Image (tube, rainbow, N blue to C red; front, side, top):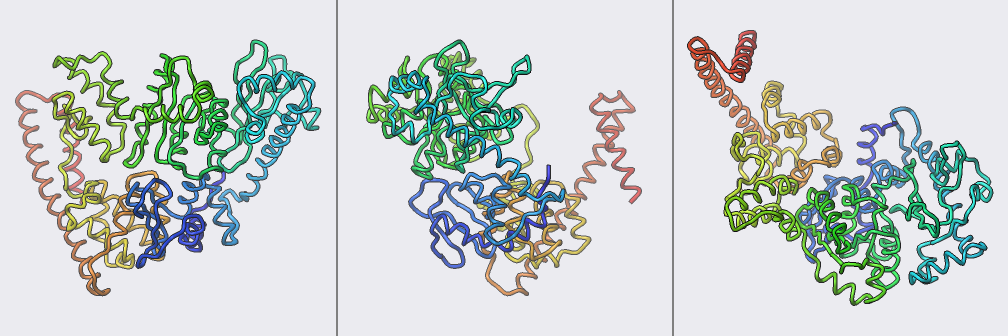
Length: 599
């Protein structure tokens, strides 16, 4: 697949003004050198969303959202990476190249006929609902389900009559085109036929409003009750959500989104004024669905039937939700009375009754503990130990933060066991002590602001020209040092060595799928001590000397430790022999000392 060159991305981010891009969508206010606003990605009353004109990126101190202008369009508009790049490039009059030499317009033009064909099919289906001789059956079904003409028009509901090749005849297109768009299917005999026959049709639009697929509800016969478009170049069932486009037309970032099971659940809720529901497309909620929804709102309510099947579906969703539960996000579970779904319930009880049910939702944390406590007798030590062991992998799925800590604290209270912060470390080698050089905490611990590595980051992020003060010998020492924090610092140094004019937002964009990006975004907002270029240079050089000095000292201590361990193993080898694990350690130390003798 063709790829957009990094050099073009760098050039694009230099030409685009992120302040202008964001201000067109979220009104910004100047605050000193930065711009602020209430964050568009979570609810808040006091602005914690900042945009830096000098560094060309945004960062929210409330929910941790951060990134470049590209990332902002992806999160705010719900666009993919390529679409975001194309959108920004058009705004500054640039043409996007691809490394294969293929122009991006070619790929777009290959997909556009599919979108066009689906729109034609949609108009055909809607026309059939109005005028086909078989349409009364579909109309009666919709009326019996309480669907009004106005809501049917809003959601573009249609009807696919019986017949094998209605679309081919009506749209005057080939079998290959219909198959590629997912509108037709091929039988075992090789015959191509209309995929949606004798069904009510529900067009599925992506977040940009493009029609990418269909769902169909059978009216008669023994076929599947609901049928969706197959996977195509423009339709991916595990990523799309029915009703999300319509929801965002009503309110771009609603206070909450309710996730239901079916098309008619979404439609019934919208008809009664609950225009905040979406549905997965005949599949369990996926990680891609959850990511997309949390870009739209900070609170999800997952609605299930109250029977055993609903409980099982909720448990599956719980597993998908936990990795996305960053601080500031909420998820709740709503179990309707047995025998009800959102459609039947809101038609009987109305909007007020449904929203009364929403007030009774079970928070994710309570549902998690209720699920984990099954078959665990907390009156016994064995039951409490079973709960602690069972909870371990579930709690570890939650991102580190206040929410994970609160869940862990509650687990400690319930079991009476003071569980370690990282539950995976139980009965294993202790993790590296906090604050040791090169650890991630060297970046993220605000309680120790004088840490040399952290201060070096702050100086370099604010004054990239200081990279010239690092000598080749010092860079070699830094390159040999292990530890995540040091590796990240080395990456930043190498980034600025290529060009001190490089846009920091590009570097952060490259790290956007890791916690490093959030740490760097926070650190870049930290101002170094006031001074002039000479004082900054002197302080930075002192910090680099401190860091490389620590490395020299650690190497000396490590050498002493290795020598002592080598002597222990050699002595044991001559007296009683070594275990397989000790033999491996012996060989590693032997190779280490051989390598040193060659230097």
